Image (tube, rainbow, N blue to C red; front, side):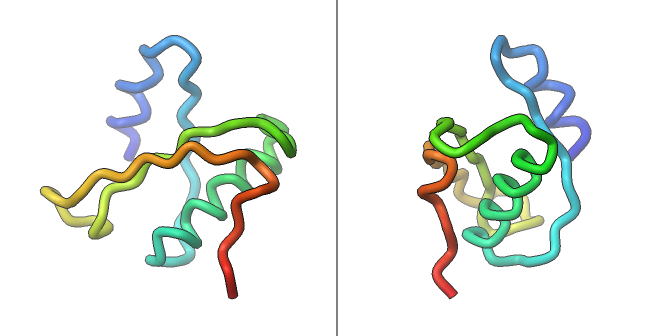
Length: 78
């Protein structure tokens, strides 16, 4: 959400990135987020990133999830 990205930009070291969702599966969305960061050259293998997501998706009042993952180690099992 644009409003959320604007707010978290105020935090030092936080660089929010928006992208289009192609799935409703939280694990796949997190993988897509890392792929988008790679495409932009913002991260590379070995970097640590924090992924944040609210579940269920697109519904207020859900559970917030935060994962700290190492780029290159995180993948969705097919």
